[in-house]
Every structure is written in C-alpha cells, then in structure tokens.
Length: 288
Image (cartoon, rainbow, N blue to C red):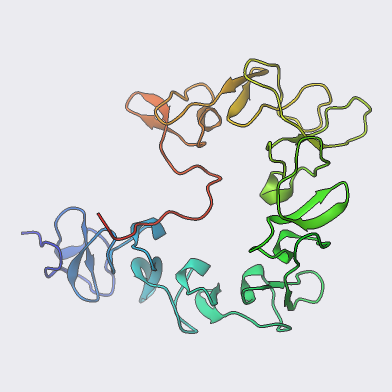
C-alpha cells in the first residue's frame, strides 16, 4: 500500500535513493525523502525536484550526494561556506557558488576570477586587474555590462557617444551595436541594423518591417529590413507570431510569441511556457 503525504516511506538501498526503487513507495505525485523517510508533496521541503520551479520561495533544487551518486531535493539555500550547490541560486544573496560549494562574496580589492564572486555593488575586473571594483554609474565609460551599476543602469550600451553605462534603451535613429545585450541589442525596437547602401556598416536602431512587408534576418543587408517585434520573417515576408495554442508546424519555435513549440496530440502548437526573454526564474510560492 502506498503512503500518503508525511507518512513513512523507504528505499531498498538508503544510499542510492533512486525513484522507483522504494520498498515502501509513496502515492503518485509524492516523492520519498531519504533523510526523514517520509513522503513529500510538490513545492515542499525535501521534495525530489528537477529544477528550482519545483520548490517553494526561499528554497532551491539543491544537489545532495549519496556515495558516488548525486540527487536533487528542495532545500533552504546555503548560508555557510562549503554548503553544496550547483548554481548561485543555491546560495543566499551574499554568497556565490564556486565549483560545487557556496562561498562568501569577495570584498573591494579582493582577487576574483568570475563575475559572480564579488559583493553587491562591486564587479570583477576580468581581463585587467582581476580584483573586485566599485560598479560604474550612469553616463560613465564602460567596457562590459558587468561594470555598470545594476540598480541604476541597464548595461554598457554603445551609441554615437561611445560605450557608456546608460539608464534607457536607444531610440530609433540612434547608432547601435548588434550583439550587445546578451547577443541582441539595446534598441527599444529590438532591431539594430544597417539600412543604407553605402557599403559601410552603419547600424542604427530601426522600427523594422510591418506585417506583410518584405524582410530578411541579416543585420548587414542594406535594402531589406528585419521584422518588427512580435513578427517573424518567413519566405521573405513578415508574419504575426502565434500565441499559446496556435499552430507552429511551419516554422516551429520561430513562429511562436514565446519561442516554444511542441508536438501535442497530432500537431505542433505553441505552448504557454515562460517566454525565453523573461526576466528572472519563476518558482512555486508554496501556496495553492
């Protein structure tokens, strides 16, 4: 007989608690916590999770080692040097994940080797001093996004007056640099391309082609623009992207507003997954 929530469960081998090897299993949709040997529900502490979205607020899907095997369970984020982790989200805000252990963030002037190693208000000067330095404020020169104050600026934005930490996106007609902003650009329109025919690459923020107009997806093509936001280019023409539930059998994820297309029943449809460019990570808050 299967056990209910918070009732006793156990594994055949307590040092290898693989799902499906319980000698006393839990009801469907519950998982067995090998430490307390009780059944746990989704979005509760000690639930056998796949990622952070399975855990309640304040907890993460944290790795736990059993002999030479590693499992993941919802647990409070690490607050002590040496606590197990596999990402910064597994540690409290004043710590980072270095290798597989939570470590205290480094202070001003301390050595660093990665962006996540410095305290809030500091950045790691990678490629130069490799020390933690104070972040750069608005309208000051910069070389990378990590240098800019994340509380007051959007990042290191290149335009006609050079690369500066800026507070807002670029307007149509402003000079821009494709590839910035995590591989995209800093244009409010989302389109940074050269539309001139002088054979010199002069990228500017542009509105883009509207639905039904001619298009291509090459930033360096002089006469033909990219499509506006919420449109995609197919067979040289801009078309509207599909919302959740819309068909995407022609162009797969490119056809979907949230870039997520899946095989459902006998067709391919846009899903209701979180959009790929959404900020942050959605997690369970522990409430119904």
